[in-house]
Length: 336
Image 1: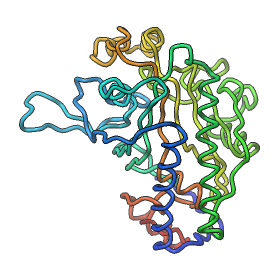
Image 2: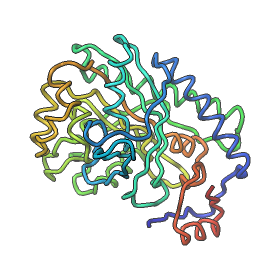
Image 3: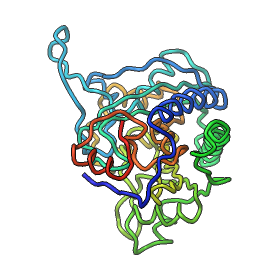
């Protein structure tokens, strides 16, 4: 358990007012986001079979919650860790066309998460995916999409200011783009998180590209990323400065997805070629799935950002250690 207590923290809104604001932000954002991105909201599964290969391995070390179902003898069922792979399959299954996409509410359990101000065992995010052409698999497409998402989030700042002027967090006016290698070169002596905090403190909103590729100085990637959904050359993380904690807050992880070539090279680099025989992976290699771009946007984290909250538990009902609950309450941080 890690807990950061900001000095003289004032949540501004009461718990009841915060609950009202959460609903307003979630309802308004998803409607605006869907329109701007040409995305249709659809239903999504809470769990999938392990044998399908559709679950997300995230950093490769997190253990999914698994169980069995009486009528499916021999099948291991896993609670989804994200819907990155399932969404791409759904776009084909449901007959979406180029430049059309989907978004859905994704809920997950992260049993191995280290709980702190930003991390919960419960994940709630908007997962989205959109079909693009082979030619559009480029950094230009990636950055244009990031700009669109930023525009919607920035518009939400004005929406929240109108209803809750005393509580709103004022955001940057634009996004600063940098690669993970450029960031390491800029701050060679800092840890990954300290690099993020340094650049976001300066720029207020930053998109860090190329997550998953080994860096030249350390030999390690900026952050772990599964080899079979994002193309490590065409992905990134969107971070904003959170005044309440004086640190960077990741709002979205996204990217152009692997094609028939990059899924093979990345699985080999990650020493997990065994995945390439799974149904989902075979469909990509055989060009049976559309080329896509997609990602996730944290619902509670977006509320946390726009309301300048000090703990994700102020905008999300989850389970926390008793000591964390007590320490937070002492310092005016009211966990739901």
